[in-house]
Length: 185
Image (cartoon, rainbow, N blue to C red; front, side, top):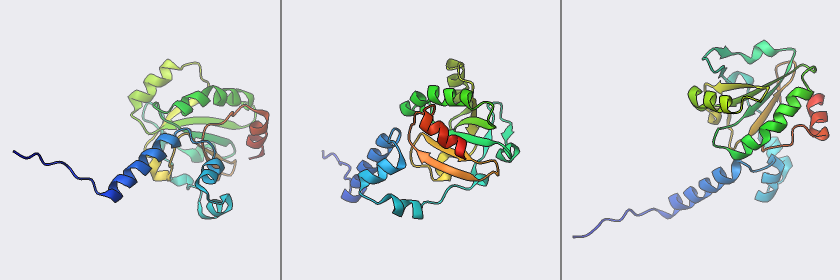
């Protein structure tokens, strides 16, 4: 009796290895500039090509299933962090995001942390980490609908409702340098 072994074609195998590498390193990849530099591509080339996501493509709801319309925050700045319960760099940066939220509390900032996971999973996580002052929300659509390639990804929406910042990677959000940058939007 012969056993049929599954044969993997070389291009499929190579792509699979590449994709696994991107996914494994992407979760905590660092800044877009760092990732681009490591790939040997000039940052200016990427910045010219990459288009910021459109705000109307972001569909959110609170953990009870009520829509969260970003247009309702016009006149305020929105810090929108895309994360997942399985993403260690996402969780590691949450205390710094919380600290930034508290520091910027009187400066017209709204902090939302959005995951596209099931509401029950996000609720369980939020209950476990109930010390955070920001709001957990759920993305109705997938992060892939926004062309997000790695988590965490942070999007900043200015007072006019325009996306002005979109970057991959965990940050020290409560550092003076980054707080200055957040205040500039």
